[in-house]
Image (cartoon, rainbow, N blue to C red):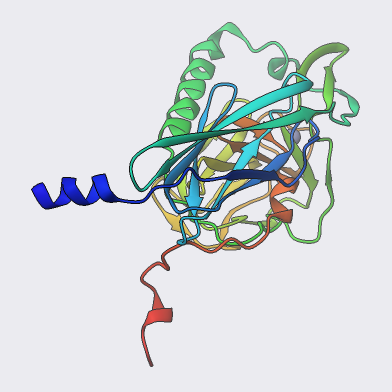
Length: 296
Ligand SMILES: [Zn+2]
């Protein structure tokens, strides 16, 4: 005990110089921004505090380079957003740095859709079910696992198709009703839907608006969502690999025809999932126990 406290008193902890580098300083609404924190002295932990979130930054193992992802909600206020980084050195002292992002408006289209009236003004008899659905989805977000499962850029869940309309302002049956929080990918009914990245299944069931629904938890505050499925091949708690089939394309719930609605949620922010396809490979500090460590 005495020895420990004596050595920590004697420990040499110079004030680290911190540098925060975002992938962009002027993200659009709905963007995914990767942030690197560099320090000239080793740190034991680092985190980034934003509008209403706290993002743990992950060390590369050296204690001098930490990474994290910031999500810009598609309805985030445009203009200046300040994030405060807090870093802890090996003597337990805190050090701070700030990151300023200037959020630009997203380039969102406007869409007019003709839907069955029951999906625009749901009947009284469905109100309880809809409230129940909302609660189940909220519970899925709360079940978030801390450990990041993904290691590389995400894959398209329906390969080879084009996707669009992220953030669209939607006029449903002549009334401005909602914003579109994902991308719609055209594909024939029954097309296999693939997991965009390694994940744990957080929700897999039929919901009123989104129809056959799967929510994948990729860890580290990142989820992807898959709506309007005709068939679901996974159950909550299943662990899936990148590109593993999880379901089939359909037109269930509020859909005008067969397509996959693909969404993403990062630290509670609704972001464009296509932004996840540009993430650079990002290896864990300590390799997971895997075949790589086994000599064959
Ligand atoms: Zn959609």
